[in-house]
Image (tube, rainbow over all chains, first blue to last red; front, top):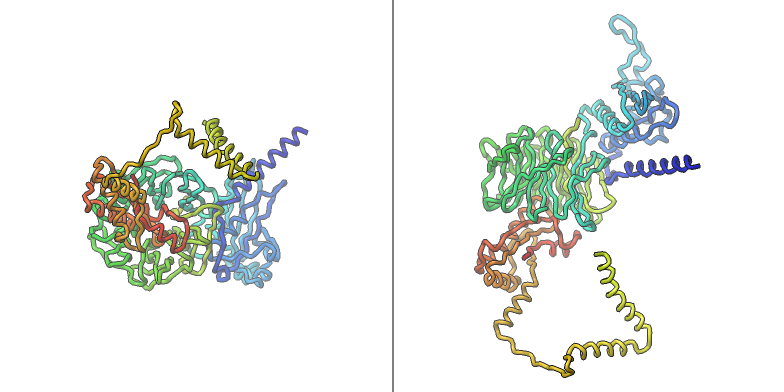
Amino acid sequence: MTKLKVFFITVCALMVGLTGVAQAKLEIVITEGINTARPIAVVPFAWKGSGPKPDGLTEVVAADLMRSGKFNPIPLTAMPQRPSSSAEVDYTEWASLGVEALLVGTIEPYGIDRYTISFEIIDVLRGQITSGTQVLQNGQLVTSEDHILDARSSVISGDQFRQYSHRISDVFYETLTGQRGAFMTRIAYVTVNHDLDKPYELVVADYDGFNERVLLRSPEPLMSPSWSPDGNKLAYVSFENKKPQIFIQDIYTRAREQMTDFPGINSSPVFSPDGQNLAMVLSKDGNPELYVMNVATKRLRRVTNHHAIDTEPSWSPDGNSLIFTSERGGRPQLYSVNLSAGQVRRLTFEGEQNLGGTFSPDGKQVIMVNRTQGNYHIARQDYPNGAMQILTQTALDESPSLAPNGSMVIYSTTHNNQQVLALVSVDGRFKARLPTREGEVKSPSWSPFLR
Amino acid sequence: MNANKALKSLFIAVPMLTLAACSSNQGAEEAVDQQTNQQQEQLQQEESGVDIGAVERQKTPEEIRAEKVAELRQENMIFFAFDDSRISSEYAQVLAAHADFLVQNPGVTVTIEGHCDERGTPEYNIALGERRAKAVAQYLQNLGVSSSQVTTVSYGEEKPLINASNSDAYAKNRRGVLVY
């Protein structure tokens, strides 16, 4: 009797625990672009053990691939069969549904809380043509397997399912697009909930909103989180001492270092691509100017010198120049400054204002906030002086941050009178909103690739 | 601490309950009137049983001015037009009152906060907010306030007065605030 009771309580506790994990703060509402994505099938992996099947693997992969905007995983109910290996696949059936590629696999028990996960990525169209045919290889007839794009097997523990799912998504994405997947990444952002004693929180979560961790809770504003290139640290601005100061915090050890305490503005810290310097904005010499600080020595170097506002620095991928927002032309527009020669060049001319510029990882494009007819939208322009394309139609868009593979922009927008995060693909086709349950979310910053 | 709080809330709750009870009666207003009359008489009566009266003293022009300045100083916000850091003439009196006070009390310091509405990027708004705060600081200094008495801080769009996305809220959020 008591044993049963204990069992019941344990089950309840487990269920509560699980739902706690399952409920990420950031949900996703895809608002545009799923019909242009490539149809694929993520077939639930076959469980080769006894007892209940460990779940939550293929669900995460399917969600990842859908969020990428590039793929449209068909629903389970639409699947004509549930193969677990390429040998079981009926190619004609899948091809008739228009499905381009399949992910199939198995989960086998390996030891206590250890599992072998095997999976294959299959090209349906090529499989239809070549599967089962014999080809001559090294003078011998063998069965052609060129429709199997990738096949892997790994042993993981029970608590690694979610992470390994993102790994599978990365492999699938790279196999089918040729571009590295960004599913094993994180985002940092600031939440504001005025009902709390300490309304401002600096939060880090997996890119999909899971595993949220609060790094700092403050009664005063927090701004501009920005990742170190190794993904271990965040630079940000905190008003905890009733004035803006720049801090660097290790996200694993909680070690925190105050980097600046200058009179006036201490704003917009951004790590250089090599992680050794921090670009920032200080107004200690009269008005907002760009500076570069050596992280180790804290030695400062002034970069701009103009009586107009200069702010929002962003490093070029080679670390040789900064783009920034300046009012020197009358209205805020984007400029670049060469760090060795100090040469300044104007980049944007379209629209009333262009602000908050950031380079794509390949340095060929700049993502920014464009204001046209009073509306703030995320825009993209070829670097340095190409045509501009407006990517979003939401309201008051700001703080764009690119995924490290350059495929997607996360930004802050206003929906139903509340600041929320949103996603838009760099081509502008895929759009999604990440609503929260309470409070406001802003200043998103996408991490670099994490190993 | 908690008991103290509970006691305090009783002090508030009990009279309110009595009032509520009274209002359900006929002639409740009379009862309340009687109560207040008794209280007033008690206040004016000395122990020896005599009633003491007084006339209101005429205020000196200095006192009247000081009072007006104090009243004006209750107003500590200056609102700005969109993307603008110029101080509208309607705030001349209020700022003059603050300047007056600061000049007469050189030991007092004031922090001027600059704030923006939510339009535009947060980092750019930090720069705009500083410009507003500095405009107010400069205004006070032009009226003789020492620069050592005035500090500025820009909160950009991070601390809105009204948390909404409409033009009324925006107008209230574009502000300079004098904090003593």
